[in-house]
Length: 202
Image (cartoon, rainbow, N blue to C red; front, side):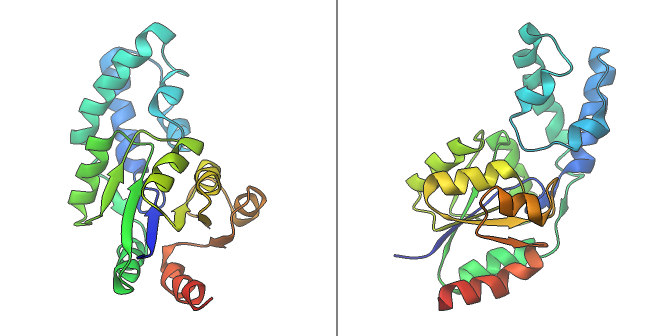
């Protein structure tokens, strides 16, 4: 069977912080809520509703989340940047005949807009998953490897029995990712092609 590699999106393939910060600022202006956008973007990973619960009453969170997702298309997608090595990492998987997945906590239609924006074609995209629930999608698609920046990504990989590759481009450094159970930790995705070659060589 072909190698199947899953990637997280935020702070693994893309630096979405500038666009997400802009979206929170627009949302705050529109709703009158006090939102510390810098703090919010410092803790990307968990579901959107977890973050919004810090700034809105519980009975408003779902409605505000819907509005955030609408604003996101205009304010966040254009402002996001490919992280170093992202496209080359995907190309490395393709070069060995592998399949590429993106498994993300992000709202799936907006995640698709991101991928289209950087011209990244994947074999499967699954959104709205977090931590161990990512493991369900990884198992379903037969992922051998999962690459992510968050401790939750490591947990998802381990739940699926996949090789957990941490990248230190998000909120956690190599020591924290290793302590969470990552099998290997890269500084960024520029190191992924060489790691993949060594991994496949066994």
